[in-house]
Length: 486
Image 1 (cartoon, rainbow, N blue to C red):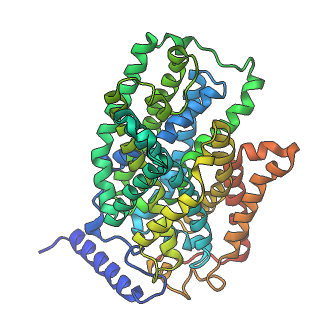
Image 2 (image 1 turned 30 degrees about the horizontal axis):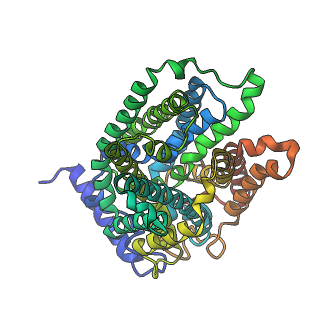
Image 3 (image 1 turned 30 degrees about the vertical axis):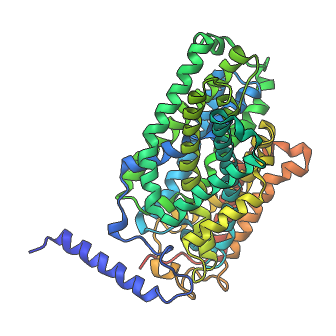
Protein backbone atom coordinates (compact mmCIF):
# COMPACT_ATOMS: atom_id res chain seq x y z
CA UNK A 1 0.00 0.00 0.00
CA UNK A 2 1.51 3.42 -0.97
CA UNK A 3 2.63 5.72 1.81
CA UNK A 4 0.81 8.95 2.68
CA UNK A 5 3.73 10.89 1.18
CA UNK A 6 3.52 8.98 -2.11
CA UNK A 7 -0.24 9.43 -2.22
CA UNK A 8 0.23 13.15 -1.62
CA UNK A 9 2.67 13.45 -4.54
CA UNK A 10 0.31 11.51 -6.80
CA UNK A 11 -2.64 13.73 -5.89
CA UNK A 12 -0.53 16.88 -6.42
CA UNK A 13 0.62 15.62 -9.83
CA UNK A 14 -2.93 14.73 -10.88
CA UNK A 15 -4.09 18.18 -9.71
CA UNK A 16 -1.40 19.80 -11.84
CA UNK A 17 -2.33 17.72 -14.87
CA UNK A 18 -6.01 18.60 -14.48
CA UNK A 19 -5.08 22.29 -14.25
CA UNK A 20 -3.08 22.08 -17.47
CA UNK A 21 -5.95 20.35 -19.24
CA UNK A 22 -8.24 23.17 -18.14
CA UNK A 23 -5.97 25.91 -19.52
CA UNK A 24 -4.73 24.16 -22.66
CA UNK A 25 -7.34 25.89 -24.81
CA UNK A 26 -6.40 29.36 -23.49
CA UNK A 27 -4.87 31.92 -25.86
CA UNK A 28 -2.16 32.47 -23.21
CA UNK A 29 -0.96 28.86 -23.34
CA UNK A 30 1.41 26.89 -25.54
CA UNK A 31 3.59 23.87 -24.88
CA UNK A 32 6.80 25.94 -24.58
CA UNK A 33 5.29 28.18 -21.89
CA UNK A 34 3.51 25.37 -20.01
CA UNK A 35 4.65 24.40 -16.51
CA UNK A 36 7.33 21.74 -16.71
CA UNK A 37 6.33 18.21 -15.84
CA UNK A 38 8.12 16.26 -13.10
CA UNK A 39 9.83 14.09 -15.73
CA UNK A 40 11.34 17.21 -17.34
CA UNK A 41 13.02 18.39 -14.15
CA UNK A 42 16.41 16.75 -14.60
CA UNK A 43 18.81 19.59 -13.72
CA UNK A 44 20.83 19.01 -10.56
CA UNK A 45 23.47 21.13 -8.81
CA UNK A 46 26.12 20.09 -11.35
CA UNK A 47 23.99 21.18 -14.31
CA UNK A 48 23.45 24.63 -12.77
CA UNK A 49 27.11 24.99 -11.86
CA UNK A 50 28.03 23.90 -15.40
CA UNK A 51 25.50 26.37 -16.80
CA UNK A 52 27.22 29.23 -14.99
CA UNK A 53 30.69 28.02 -15.89
CA UNK A 54 29.62 27.89 -19.52
CA UNK A 55 28.00 31.34 -19.38
CA UNK A 56 30.59 33.12 -17.21
CA UNK A 57 33.60 31.89 -19.20
CA UNK A 58 32.94 34.03 -22.21
CA UNK A 59 34.63 36.87 -24.05
CA UNK A 60 32.36 39.64 -22.68
CA UNK A 61 33.31 38.49 -19.15
CA UNK A 62 36.98 38.68 -20.09
CA UNK A 63 36.47 42.09 -21.71
CA UNK A 64 34.51 43.29 -18.70
CA UNK A 65 37.46 42.50 -16.44
CA UNK A 66 40.09 43.84 -18.80
CA UNK A 67 38.09 47.06 -19.28
CA UNK A 68 38.63 47.81 -15.58
CA UNK A 69 42.39 47.56 -16.10
CA UNK A 70 42.14 49.68 -19.25
CA UNK A 71 40.13 52.22 -17.22
CA UNK A 72 42.88 52.54 -14.61
CA UNK A 73 42.18 50.06 -11.78
CA UNK A 74 44.89 47.97 -10.18
CA UNK A 75 44.41 44.21 -10.29
CA UNK A 76 43.28 44.09 -6.65
CA UNK A 77 40.71 46.82 -7.18
CA UNK A 78 39.39 45.08 -10.30
CA UNK A 79 39.08 41.64 -8.65
CA UNK A 80 37.31 43.12 -5.63
CA UNK A 81 34.86 45.07 -7.82
CA UNK A 82 34.00 41.98 -9.86
CA UNK A 83 33.54 39.70 -6.85
CA UNK A 84 31.37 42.25 -5.02
CA UNK A 85 29.20 42.89 -8.08
CA UNK A 86 28.55 39.19 -8.65
CA UNK A 87 27.84 38.59 -4.97
CA UNK A 88 25.26 41.38 -5.09
CA UNK A 89 23.52 40.14 -8.24
CA UNK A 90 23.40 36.58 -6.85
CA UNK A 91 20.78 37.72 -4.31
CA UNK A 92 18.01 38.71 -6.79
CA UNK A 93 19.12 35.76 -8.95
CA UNK A 94 18.30 33.26 -6.21
CA UNK A 95 15.13 35.08 -5.16
CA UNK A 96 13.70 35.02 -8.69
CA UNK A 97 14.81 31.40 -9.12
CA UNK A 98 12.32 30.14 -6.56
CA UNK A 99 9.15 30.54 -8.65
CA UNK A 100 10.66 28.61 -11.55
CA UNK A 101 11.59 25.63 -9.40
CA UNK A 102 8.38 25.79 -7.38
CA UNK A 103 5.85 26.10 -10.20
CA UNK A 104 7.82 25.10 -13.32
CA UNK A 105 7.02 28.38 -15.09
CA UNK A 106 9.21 30.52 -17.38
CA UNK A 107 9.94 34.20 -16.80
CA UNK A 108 7.18 35.71 -19.03
CA UNK A 109 4.55 33.65 -17.19
CA UNK A 110 6.05 34.54 -13.80
CA UNK A 111 5.85 38.24 -14.73
CA UNK A 112 2.07 37.93 -15.29
CA UNK A 113 1.46 37.93 -11.53
CA UNK A 114 2.96 41.43 -11.14
CA UNK A 115 2.18 43.07 -14.50
CA UNK A 116 -0.99 41.27 -15.61
CA UNK A 117 -1.46 38.51 -18.15
CA UNK A 118 -1.00 40.97 -21.03
CA UNK A 119 1.10 43.62 -19.28
CA UNK A 120 3.81 41.00 -18.70
CA UNK A 121 4.76 41.40 -22.35
CA UNK A 122 6.29 44.81 -21.55
CA UNK A 123 9.00 43.65 -19.08
CA UNK A 124 9.57 40.39 -20.92
CA UNK A 125 10.08 42.10 -24.28
CA UNK A 126 12.30 44.74 -22.62
CA UNK A 127 14.45 41.90 -21.28
CA UNK A 128 14.30 40.22 -24.68
CA UNK A 129 15.63 43.27 -26.53
CA UNK A 130 18.63 43.45 -24.22
CA UNK A 131 19.24 39.76 -24.90
CA UNK A 132 19.04 40.42 -28.64
CA UNK A 133 21.78 43.02 -28.24
CA UNK A 134 23.90 40.54 -26.30
CA UNK A 135 23.20 37.85 -28.89
CA UNK A 136 24.53 40.17 -31.58
CA UNK A 137 27.64 41.01 -29.52
CA UNK A 138 28.44 37.37 -28.85
CA UNK A 139 27.81 36.36 -32.45
CA UNK A 140 30.11 39.10 -33.72
CA UNK A 141 32.85 37.91 -31.33
CA UNK A 142 32.39 34.29 -32.41
CA UNK A 143 32.53 35.29 -36.07
CA UNK A 144 35.73 37.25 -35.44
CA UNK A 145 37.27 34.20 -33.79
CA UNK A 146 36.44 31.95 -36.75
CA UNK A 147 37.80 34.61 -39.12
CA UNK A 148 41.09 34.78 -37.20
CA UNK A 149 41.39 30.97 -37.12
CA UNK A 150 41.04 30.83 -40.90
CA UNK A 151 43.60 33.61 -41.36
CA UNK A 152 46.12 31.75 -39.20
CA UNK A 153 45.64 28.42 -40.98
CA UNK A 154 45.21 29.63 -44.57
CA UNK A 155 46.79 32.84 -45.83
CA UNK A 156 44.50 32.81 -48.85
CA UNK A 157 41.50 33.55 -46.63
CA UNK A 158 42.66 37.17 -46.45
CA UNK A 159 41.72 37.60 -50.09
CA UNK A 160 38.18 36.23 -49.74
CA UNK A 161 35.70 39.10 -50.23
CA UNK A 162 33.57 39.72 -47.12
CA UNK A 163 35.40 37.04 -45.13
CA UNK A 164 34.49 38.50 -41.72
CA UNK A 165 30.81 38.59 -42.69
CA UNK A 166 30.89 35.00 -43.94
CA UNK A 167 32.30 33.94 -40.56
CA UNK A 168 29.77 36.09 -38.69
CA UNK A 169 26.81 34.44 -40.40
CA UNK A 170 28.40 30.98 -40.16
CA UNK A 171 28.54 31.38 -36.38
CA UNK A 172 25.00 32.80 -36.43
CA UNK A 173 23.88 29.59 -38.17
CA UNK A 174 25.57 27.45 -35.49
CA UNK A 175 23.54 29.24 -32.82
CA UNK A 176 20.31 28.79 -34.73
CA UNK A 177 21.01 25.08 -35.11
CA UNK A 178 21.17 24.64 -31.33
CA UNK A 179 17.92 26.60 -30.97
CA UNK A 180 16.14 24.36 -33.45
CA UNK A 181 17.32 21.30 -31.51
CA UNK A 182 15.53 22.62 -28.37
CA UNK A 183 16.31 23.31 -24.71
CA UNK A 184 17.66 19.83 -23.91
CA UNK A 185 20.54 20.45 -26.34
CA UNK A 186 21.49 23.49 -24.23
CA UNK A 187 21.97 21.31 -21.14
CA UNK A 188 24.14 18.86 -23.10
CA UNK A 189 26.19 21.72 -24.59
CA UNK A 190 26.88 23.18 -21.14
CA UNK A 191 27.73 19.81 -19.55
CA UNK A 192 30.46 19.03 -22.08
CA UNK A 193 31.57 22.59 -22.81
CA UNK A 194 32.34 23.63 -19.22
CA UNK A 195 35.41 21.37 -18.60
CA UNK A 196 36.89 22.30 -22.00
CA UNK A 197 36.53 26.01 -21.27
CA UNK A 198 38.31 25.68 -17.93
CA UNK A 199 41.30 23.96 -19.58
CA UNK A 200 41.57 26.60 -22.33
CA UNK A 201 41.35 29.45 -19.80
CA UNK A 202 44.11 28.03 -17.59
CA UNK A 203 46.28 27.42 -20.67
CA UNK A 204 45.93 31.08 -21.71
CA UNK A 205 46.96 32.22 -18.24
CA UNK A 206 49.95 29.86 -18.27
CA UNK A 207 51.07 31.22 -21.65
CA UNK A 208 50.95 34.81 -20.44
CA UNK A 209 52.73 33.87 -17.21
CA UNK A 210 55.65 32.31 -19.12
CA UNK A 211 55.92 35.09 -21.73
CA UNK A 212 55.80 37.88 -19.15
CA UNK A 213 58.19 36.16 -16.74
CA UNK A 214 55.66 35.62 -13.95
CA UNK A 215 52.99 37.68 -12.25
CA UNK A 216 55.48 40.33 -11.20
CA UNK A 217 54.42 42.92 -13.83
CA UNK A 218 50.76 42.59 -12.82
CA UNK A 219 51.37 42.65 -9.07
CA UNK A 220 53.65 45.65 -9.29
CA UNK A 221 51.47 47.72 -11.64
CA UNK A 222 49.65 50.44 -9.66
CA UNK A 223 46.26 51.85 -10.56
CA UNK A 224 46.14 55.31 -12.07
CA UNK A 225 43.94 56.73 -9.29
CA UNK A 226 45.97 58.78 -6.82
CA UNK A 227 43.25 58.95 -4.15
CA UNK A 228 39.98 57.34 -3.07
CA UNK A 229 38.15 60.48 -4.25
CA UNK A 230 39.47 59.88 -7.78
CA UNK A 231 38.81 56.14 -7.60
CA UNK A 232 35.19 56.31 -6.34
CA UNK A 233 33.42 57.59 -9.52
CA UNK A 234 34.95 54.87 -11.70
CA UNK A 235 34.32 52.23 -9.01
CA UNK A 236 30.62 53.15 -8.79
CA UNK A 237 30.10 52.92 -12.55
CA UNK A 238 32.12 49.70 -12.71
CA UNK A 239 30.18 48.07 -9.86
CA UNK A 240 26.90 48.96 -11.57
CA UNK A 241 28.29 47.47 -14.76
CA UNK A 242 29.18 44.25 -12.91
CA UNK A 243 25.64 43.96 -11.54
CA UNK A 244 24.16 44.99 -14.87
CA UNK A 245 26.17 42.28 -16.64
CA UNK A 246 24.06 39.50 -15.08
CA UNK A 247 20.97 41.55 -14.19
CA UNK A 248 19.51 40.05 -17.35
CA UNK A 249 19.67 36.51 -15.98
CA UNK A 250 18.55 37.74 -12.56
CA UNK A 251 15.17 38.33 -14.22
CA UNK A 252 14.70 35.27 -16.38
CA UNK A 253 16.61 32.72 -14.33
CA UNK A 254 13.35 30.82 -13.79
CA UNK A 255 13.56 29.93 -17.51
CA UNK A 256 16.23 27.48 -16.27
CA UNK A 257 15.21 26.71 -12.68
CA UNK A 258 11.88 25.41 -13.98
CA UNK A 259 13.95 22.33 -14.90
CA UNK A 260 15.52 22.00 -11.42
CA UNK A 261 15.12 18.80 -9.43
CA UNK A 262 14.74 20.83 -6.25
CA UNK A 263 15.21 24.29 -4.75
CA UNK A 264 18.44 23.10 -3.14
CA UNK A 265 19.85 21.89 -6.47
CA UNK A 266 19.65 25.22 -8.25
CA UNK A 267 20.63 27.26 -5.17
CA UNK A 268 23.77 25.24 -4.57
CA UNK A 269 24.76 25.09 -8.24
CA UNK A 270 24.28 28.82 -8.78
CA UNK A 271 25.95 29.88 -5.53
CA UNK A 272 29.05 27.90 -6.48
CA UNK A 273 28.95 28.53 -10.20
CA UNK A 274 28.33 32.28 -10.56
CA UNK A 275 30.52 34.32 -8.17
CA UNK A 276 33.47 31.93 -8.12
CA UNK A 277 33.61 31.36 -11.88
CA UNK A 278 33.16 35.04 -12.71
CA UNK A 279 35.86 36.08 -10.24
CA UNK A 280 38.36 33.42 -11.29
CA UNK A 281 37.81 33.93 -15.01
CA UNK A 282 37.90 37.70 -14.58
CA UNK A 283 41.22 37.27 -12.77
CA UNK A 284 42.51 35.54 -15.89
CA UNK A 285 41.31 38.47 -18.02
CA UNK A 286 42.91 40.94 -15.60
CA UNK A 287 46.18 39.02 -15.36
CA UNK A 288 46.55 38.42 -19.08
CA UNK A 289 45.63 42.01 -19.98
CA UNK A 290 48.13 43.35 -17.43
CA UNK A 291 50.87 41.09 -18.75
CA UNK A 292 50.25 42.07 -22.38
CA UNK A 293 51.78 45.45 -21.46
CA UNK A 294 55.05 43.64 -20.73
CA UNK A 295 54.77 41.23 -23.66
CA UNK A 296 53.58 43.59 -26.41
CA UNK A 297 54.07 47.06 -24.96
CA UNK A 298 50.34 47.81 -24.79
CA UNK A 299 47.25 46.60 -22.93
CA UNK A 300 45.25 44.33 -25.27
CA UNK A 301 41.74 44.01 -23.83
CA UNK A 302 40.24 42.05 -26.76
CA UNK A 303 41.15 38.33 -26.43
CA UNK A 304 40.42 37.65 -30.09
CA UNK A 305 43.01 40.27 -31.07
CA UNK A 306 45.39 38.78 -28.49
CA UNK A 307 44.95 35.24 -29.82
CA UNK A 308 45.95 36.48 -33.25
CA UNK A 309 49.34 37.48 -31.80
CA UNK A 310 50.23 34.07 -30.37
CA UNK A 311 52.49 33.32 -33.34
CA UNK A 312 51.96 29.59 -33.90
CA UNK A 313 49.00 28.88 -36.22
CA UNK A 314 48.13 25.79 -34.16
CA UNK A 315 48.18 27.80 -30.92
CA UNK A 316 46.00 30.46 -32.51
CA UNK A 317 43.53 27.84 -33.76
CA UNK A 318 43.28 26.07 -30.37
CA UNK A 319 42.89 29.33 -28.43
CA UNK A 320 40.22 30.60 -30.76
CA UNK A 321 38.42 27.24 -30.78
CA UNK A 322 38.04 27.88 -27.06
CA UNK A 323 36.66 31.33 -27.87
CA UNK A 324 34.10 29.82 -30.25
CA UNK A 325 32.92 27.18 -27.74
CA UNK A 326 32.80 29.74 -24.91
CA UNK A 327 30.81 32.14 -27.02
CA UNK A 328 28.38 29.48 -28.25
CA UNK A 329 27.63 28.13 -24.76
CA UNK A 330 26.98 31.62 -23.37
CA UNK A 331 25.06 32.89 -26.35
CA UNK A 332 22.56 30.06 -26.49
CA UNK A 333 21.87 29.87 -22.76
CA UNK A 334 21.99 33.55 -21.80
CA UNK A 335 20.80 35.32 -24.92
CA UNK A 336 18.35 33.08 -26.77
CA UNK A 337 16.24 31.30 -24.14
CA UNK A 338 14.80 34.48 -22.61
CA UNK A 339 13.84 36.35 -25.81
CA UNK A 340 12.55 33.16 -27.41
CA UNK A 341 10.18 32.70 -24.47
CA UNK A 342 9.30 36.41 -24.45
CA UNK A 343 8.33 36.48 -28.12
CA UNK A 344 6.41 33.25 -27.66
CA UNK A 345 4.57 34.84 -24.72
CA UNK A 346 3.58 37.84 -26.88
CA UNK A 347 1.72 35.50 -29.28
CA UNK A 348 1.53 32.01 -27.73
CA UNK A 349 -0.55 30.52 -30.52
CA UNK A 350 1.63 31.87 -33.32
CA UNK A 351 5.22 31.88 -32.01
CA UNK A 352 6.96 28.78 -30.65
CA UNK A 353 10.27 28.71 -28.75
CA UNK A 354 12.13 27.89 -31.97
CA UNK A 355 10.45 30.69 -33.92
CA UNK A 356 11.20 33.10 -31.06
CA UNK A 357 14.84 32.06 -31.19
CA UNK A 358 15.04 32.82 -34.90
CA UNK A 359 13.45 36.25 -34.32
CA UNK A 360 16.14 36.85 -31.68
CA UNK A 361 18.84 35.99 -34.20
CA UNK A 362 17.48 38.44 -36.76
CA UNK A 363 17.11 41.30 -34.26
CA UNK A 364 20.61 40.62 -32.90
CA UNK A 365 22.08 41.33 -36.32
CA UNK A 366 19.89 44.42 -36.80
CA UNK A 367 21.25 45.98 -33.56
CA UNK A 368 24.72 46.29 -35.15
CA UNK A 369 26.84 44.75 -32.35
CA UNK A 370 30.14 45.86 -33.91
CA UNK A 371 29.31 49.40 -32.77
CA UNK A 372 28.65 48.35 -29.17
CA UNK A 373 32.15 46.83 -29.06
CA UNK A 374 33.86 49.90 -30.53
CA UNK A 375 35.75 50.58 -27.25
CA UNK A 376 35.62 49.75 -23.55
CA UNK A 377 33.86 53.02 -22.64
CA UNK A 378 30.91 52.30 -24.95
CA UNK A 379 30.79 48.74 -23.66
CA UNK A 380 30.85 49.68 -19.96
CA UNK A 381 29.21 53.11 -19.66
CA UNK A 382 26.65 53.05 -22.45
CA UNK A 383 25.68 49.40 -22.81
CA UNK A 384 26.03 47.74 -19.39
CA UNK A 385 25.09 50.66 -17.15
CA UNK A 386 22.41 51.89 -19.55
CA UNK A 387 20.28 48.78 -19.80
CA UNK A 388 20.63 48.05 -16.07
CA UNK A 389 18.43 51.09 -15.48
CA UNK A 390 15.58 49.27 -17.26
CA UNK A 391 16.11 45.86 -15.65
CA UNK A 392 16.64 46.94 -12.02
CA UNK A 393 13.03 48.13 -11.56
CA UNK A 394 11.65 44.89 -13.05
CA UNK A 395 13.66 42.82 -10.57
CA UNK A 396 12.45 44.95 -7.66
CA UNK A 397 8.81 44.66 -8.71
CA UNK A 398 8.94 40.88 -9.19
CA UNK A 399 10.60 40.29 -5.82
CA UNK A 400 8.16 42.61 -4.05
CA UNK A 401 5.15 40.93 -5.66
CA UNK A 402 6.26 37.33 -5.07
CA UNK A 403 7.72 37.61 -1.58
CA UNK A 404 6.23 40.66 0.16
CA UNK A 405 2.70 40.58 -1.26
CA UNK A 406 1.93 37.03 -2.42
CA UNK A 407 4.15 35.20 0.10
CA UNK A 408 5.35 32.85 -2.68
CA UNK A 409 1.80 31.70 -3.47
CA UNK A 410 0.73 31.71 -7.14
CA UNK A 411 -2.31 30.29 -8.93
CA UNK A 412 -1.07 28.30 -11.90
CA UNK A 413 -4.49 28.20 -13.55
CA UNK A 414 -4.93 32.00 -13.35
CA UNK A 415 -1.47 32.65 -14.82
CA UNK A 416 -2.67 31.09 -18.09
CA UNK A 417 -6.24 32.42 -18.30
CA UNK A 418 -8.07 35.66 -18.94
CA UNK A 419 -10.42 36.85 -16.24
CA UNK A 420 -8.49 35.37 -13.31
CA UNK A 421 -6.75 37.03 -10.39
CA UNK A 422 -3.97 38.31 -12.66
CA UNK A 423 -6.35 39.96 -15.13
CA UNK A 424 -6.27 43.29 -13.20
CA UNK A 425 -7.55 45.90 -15.70
CA UNK A 426 -8.11 44.18 -19.07
CA UNK A 427 -4.91 42.20 -18.64
CA UNK A 428 -2.72 45.06 -17.39
CA UNK A 429 -1.63 45.84 -13.83
CA UNK A 430 -1.14 49.58 -14.10
CA UNK A 431 0.45 49.65 -10.65
CA UNK A 432 3.26 47.45 -11.92
CA UNK A 433 3.73 49.51 -15.07
CA UNK A 434 3.66 52.78 -13.09
CA UNK A 435 6.30 51.43 -10.70
CA UNK A 436 8.39 50.35 -13.68
CA UNK A 437 8.16 53.84 -15.17
CA UNK A 438 9.08 55.40 -11.83
CA UNK A 439 12.12 53.16 -11.41
CA UNK A 440 13.38 53.79 -14.94
CA UNK A 441 12.72 57.52 -14.64
CA UNK A 442 14.70 57.80 -11.41
CA UNK A 443 17.64 55.87 -12.88
CA UNK A 444 17.80 57.90 -16.09
CA UNK A 445 17.20 61.28 -14.46
CA UNK A 446 20.94 61.42 -13.85
CA UNK A 447 21.60 60.94 -17.55
CA UNK A 448 19.62 64.01 -18.59
CA UNK A 449 20.24 66.20 -15.49
CA UNK A 450 23.97 66.46 -14.80
CA UNK A 451 23.77 67.54 -11.10
CA UNK A 452 22.12 64.17 -10.37
CA UNK A 453 24.53 62.12 -12.49
CA UNK A 454 25.10 59.73 -9.58
CA UNK A 455 21.60 58.30 -10.12
CA UNK A 456 22.65 57.03 -13.54
CA UNK A 457 25.95 55.72 -12.20
CA UNK A 458 23.91 53.61 -9.75
CA UNK A 459 21.22 52.89 -12.38
CA UNK A 460 20.43 49.28 -11.40
CA UNK A 461 20.41 49.98 -7.67
CA UNK A 462 18.31 53.15 -7.99
CA UNK A 463 15.84 51.47 -10.35
CA UNK A 464 15.54 48.39 -8.12
CA UNK A 465 14.87 50.41 -4.95
CA UNK A 466 12.41 52.85 -6.53
CA UNK A 467 10.57 50.11 -8.47
CA UNK A 468 10.16 47.90 -5.40
CA UNK A 469 9.07 50.77 -3.12
CA UNK A 470 6.64 52.28 -5.61
CA UNK A 471 5.05 48.93 -6.40
CA UNK A 472 4.59 48.03 -2.74
CA UNK A 473 3.02 51.41 -1.98
CA UNK A 474 0.67 51.33 -4.98
CA UNK A 475 -0.45 47.74 -4.44
CA UNK A 476 -1.10 48.06 -0.72
CA UNK A 477 -3.18 51.20 -1.28
CA UNK A 478 -5.20 50.18 -4.34
CA UNK A 479 -5.42 46.37 -4.32
CA UNK A 480 -6.95 43.87 -1.87
CA UNK A 481 -4.69 41.23 -0.36
CA UNK A 482 -3.66 38.72 -3.11
CA UNK A 483 -5.50 35.41 -3.06
CA UNK A 484 -3.66 32.23 -2.20
CA UNK A 485 -2.70 29.69 -4.83
CA UNK A 486 -5.12 27.02 -5.98
